[in-house]
Length: 363
Image (tube, rainbow, N blue to C red; front, side):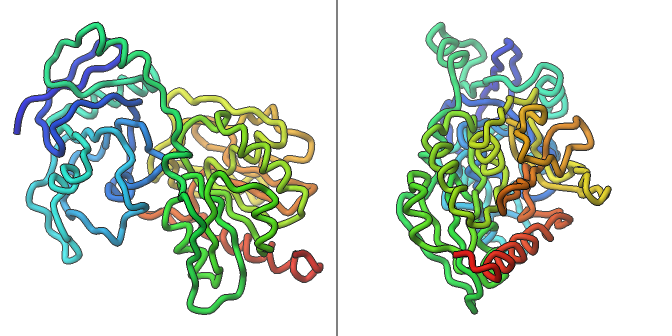
């Protein structure tokens, strides 16, 4: 392994050992606190454009398992770990992390004090960073580092064509509006008997309604939700059709924006599998998996929106029910893999919503 450096926008420099692809990279530096699920993190489209710090100290110990991937690609810009396991052990293992990252063109660093690095991000907030072969950057490199912004993520990660996933027995028809969707959303829906029609981010309200779905799923995805002005406009039109809608993560934010609310960038975001969320209706607390850097501002929600869930740590909005239409959204991931499974009941709620709408004669 060769020496390489992680250089932060605030001037901090961390020396580490290079593995994966030996290339330089610039991205937005964030951390994930999950103890498992590194393969899902690597292939989650929501990490588009970011350099991810894994706070759990040992990564790669169960190797590479393609059936656990959330997409066909690694979307993050670079990967930072404390210790990289070079001899994975798992009966499902099909390869080593180093080779997988090399084939994906993604640089990684190990031997980094990830605890100290995470503290910097936690205290000073999300910032840009660069992986470099030298500890000192040129003026051009500094300009590229400081000027970096995650953009174009939805366009890059969304499917380009309509695709259909069939369940063993079809009970419902669901359109999954793909803004960078994780595969496990489809797995959850098909397990409940949903025929899932994936449509690209560029689909219009009229095109989606013409498919005559029983329900619509708004997927997760990367970047600043407010950048997606065309999608927000189409989503506002789509709400007029009265079709049940369930939004997750970016889908939650886009729904709020189309109803007149605002979003804000969080200090360092929520990324991990241990975020406690309060259901204000039942008083119950659920442990959830999350991956987002933006949040809906609760005090900007319109009169038709009822804040249903809030984050127990910082009080940020985690879910909204819409009183005048069959729509609900959550910031967290009820389809989480790897876990937790506390909020999986929200898919059952979506199924019930579709059944009730069909019983009333809805299309």
